[in-house]
Image 1 (tube, one colour):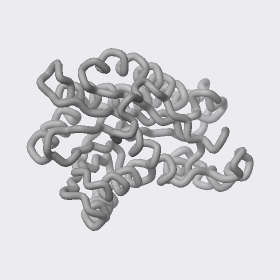
Image 2 (cartoon, helix red, strand yellow; image 1 turned 30 degrees about the vertical axis):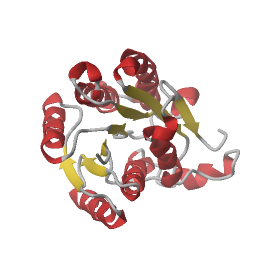
Image 3 (cartoon, one colour; image 1 turned 60 degrees about the vertical axis):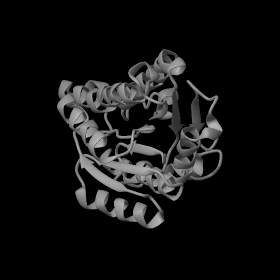
Length: 249
């Protein structure tokens, strides 16, 4: 049976790069997106060209449980039994201090970046865990090196949401390890993706890249390679790990 992987937030950046790499290894892929249908369809076509036996797309707002349930119902209907989940979808907001942030912003940040991945992981466990009749699988959560820096006067809300993902990874990995499910995370550093533009700093990767120990920002493929390794049998004894992909930062 060929592997079957759901990648959230896969219409661009790290998620799209992960979908393409998995496709080249023969995975069935489901490309989740929140807004940009055209971009998601482009990624799906690329995945098919790279060798994916199937590449489908699905729109969902992961902050809403009903959308998550619809997403996984689509998985059940259109993919082989799920073997992998990449919890990549996430948001940032405009750079600001905490005393400038509204409650609505904070609630949205935590809903998308924490509640969404937890709901997706819950549904994946229901399908993968031997406790529920599954055959095992892997969940890879995408965190951020912002958890170590805290992102002061930029987006402490984003950093805090990713800190929650680190703790969630540690706890869930222990909860389901004996049920055939490995849970890990990657913690990217500054990566050259479009997410910086949503924070009002489209040139952030180019501007800060030369200040990093390796002298440049990461390419999305470099983070995706780490995710793909964690999903693979080469990482069969790796659970609860949080892998820094930060260029030495």
